[in-house]
Length: 265
Image 1 (cartoon, rainbow, N blue to C red):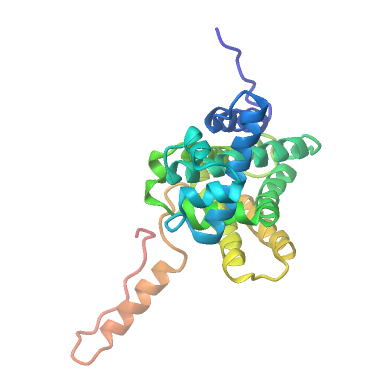
Image 2: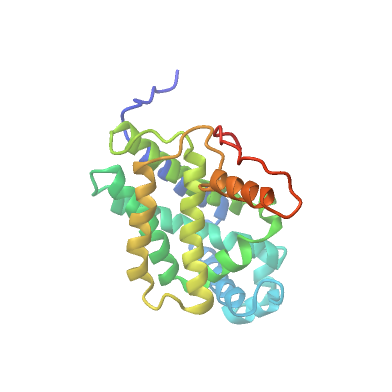
């Protein structure tokens, strides 16, 4: 029988450890040191080429030249540039998860760990700009990502967020969130948009200075989480009533009173 998990214990570390292991298994790095070093150099070269030229225009011969290895050496590891492109994010995301886990162990609260996770996402992209361009501008938007191994790493990112939110609920740091997946989507979308805007336009000029207030604002969502069944966009009923009043006062329209909202969409 498997070990029972104490529901009161933080779950983030187990999920993060699983994410790190997923990255190691998916990267498929060679076992021999010399071969492993060459493989790593090919991946580093691929990141530079993809960031510079984009995946669509890049060629395997460009990657080989950038890495300073024969073209045949690249084919020893990968059959196509697309295969390389989807391995590139896996290796670096494993590094990101490991860095987060090491730093998060020193923190005592779920809020502190969640804040670190979001902040570190941006900082890691800032420190690895070529990788970030490949992931956020090339790989993540691709419709083919659902069929690739990198999807596991991206899913792990969301699972860590879910674990951190759940840990905060169990420790009483914020009330239960009945729409956790929606909250995670908001977190990922907001942080990703900040990174993408910075990669494309170098705005905000001070990326990390802008990150702190955004993280604080996102965490404030947890203090008043959405309730189950809340489907209306804020202000929808007010707009519906205003539209009804305008329609009722148009020339030729029969007078009628604005409907009273019953709270339904």
